[in-house]
Length: 255
Image 1: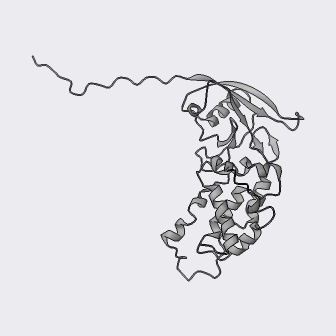
Image 2: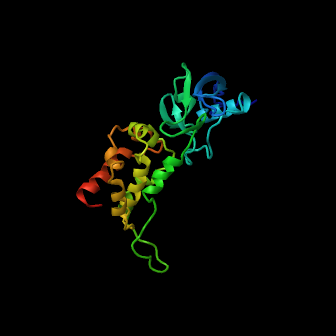
Image 3: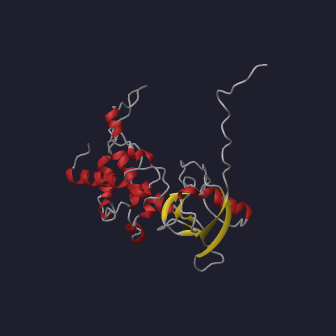
């Protein structure tokens, strides 16, 4: 009779993750019914690793189909679901329930500074108008040589690498107190996208963009509050980028 030994005993079964009830207080607005926005609360059963976007889906699918919000990729790439969560601009698809204080209600509202259309949806047209105005596209001085790329060194590419990460979610711009009070201000996102081409060694229209931003509603309206940097879901150093654009205007050099 042989005796079997267990050199590697089976691991203990993982503890079952428990769901719990979360209260979301959402700022609602229906232009056909409401004169002013109103707050409405919803209780939803969620897991710690669920996201605010999951909670919004659950409310829409199971409790109130009229709840309106934008979302697309659900992976922090498209930037369409930017909103204010507990007073901070965030992406709903990147904000985990467990990272918030679930002992209190979670407040969700539309981003500020842009016209409110319905519930968590704002009119993005003013935001994209500023984006287009800074001419955020490559403008080389001469055509590329036949069958050749526009060569750029690693260091030249690294110079503007940070500002290539923008996903146009408007989290930075709609967190800016100057933008809230001045509808003409370009806003951080537009300046970030101008920066991306101003410092691109392959582009020959840096001065054109600097002239556009050297305006009373351009970079000089920035008050360096760092709200934009804190709000950016991609970790872009927005305030630093704005400062670099200012410095290029003062020095007359792009390097």
